[in-house]
Length: 309
Image (cartoon, rainbow, N blue to C red; front, side, top):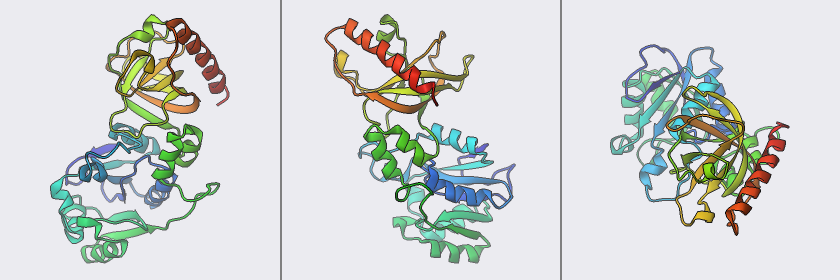
């Protein structure tokens, strides 16, 4: 998959059908739009923004994103997209009117000929542009526009939305989140150096930041760990803790994953951790021995759960 981060056309993918949106989570609702782009029998892809416009306009708001840019790249690549336009969202882009966005970005900049949007799509300064405006402006510039109507997904109780997925994760319901996402909720990023306390307890962990992401319910999870880079690439099973490690005092929230039956150095490598099932909340133990005993129990429980998926 080719990634374009400037207002220039792809040098290798021409006449693409491109879905436009933020695509946070790339959930089943987004898939309706993406599948329409894919259905035209030509190269296809997506146009999205980094940072998320909501982050740009409210930088001090609580973290809300389901995916960082890296995880979103991997998801589009998994879906088979040919091109991803990841445009920098800044004051210049935010100030464009709807007409300027269509002319300067979609037509003159990216040289697009066909786009797909959801029925509730808004764009341009102050989100004043509507789907009807996009259709009118597209007709003026030779840009075909397809609209994906909003509809409920079969088997879903109500419409799929990023908000509902965040609620499920905040309540410790990763399987419900996965049913709306169409895939396991994943946290992706680089393995960072930590305090190495887990190693001393016989449970070495790969530590990853969750900065900027909507935090799932703090606690312990059964997980699938995909090592994306380095000599240990591959899929593994494990158990992970999301939270602030109350046993050891105040800490920034992070993700610590113990990979079963694994030996090797993962520092600096990139991992994708899928949250499969919530096991228990965070807690502070009376002793390190008690913590170690609980970790052994958590591992046994996670192995049993993961053996059935």
